[in-house]
Length: 267
Image 1 (cartoon, one colour):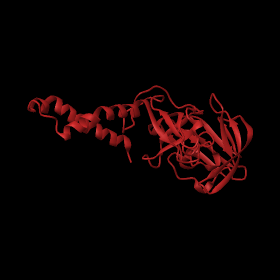
Image 2 (cartoon, one colour):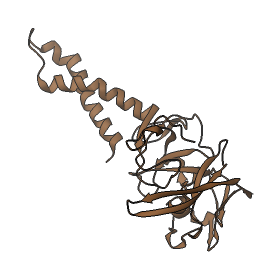
Image 3 (cartoon, one colour):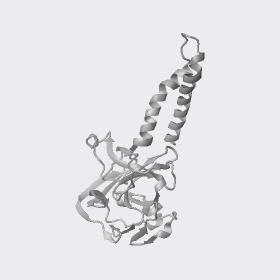
């Protein structure tokens, strides 16, 4: 469901009726006669729809985390807020940038439209910006030939899909200005080669049993999930085009099962 498009259509319809009544219909209505329902209801909803549309399109938008690919940073069931203007002002629906205010940085948690199906929103961490050489071998991430600093914190366990109990190592990783935690399952291979697709600009990448190396092309970004061995990300379906960017994830605003997470900033 294309919610922004639905909101735009409702805005145009209710706003059009409000404007038509203000300029034409109201003048021809007999004195003392009330507004018909098809004018009253749209006029009542128009300001509400306008406020919601502006907020979601240009300021902040709420999202729900549907999968465990970003554990331990984000849990299934987290409701998050995404800053829509950090990376520039974009036209609603078309998602075309009209005012540049910045670009994604390494370490940002970013929401974007899935390159293989732009009707879906994905959330991952940016590990490579245009021009970067990103490598991941033997569970070690390297950017431009430099290993990303990591230190082990301890063990981490969670239930996957309500059926499987997963045990992993929790590590602190420093890609950007602030460290964040990741999960690694030592018993799993670094890369599932069979899952790698024939994505656009795949010639920028080299794959083998030990891992991969990719050079991020201009206007694109390389993303990975913090739950490294349980994330379908740029390793498998390729680079994120700049035009697909939605915004930067900034805060957890609700979680029905973990109220203590409310208000937690996303690192």
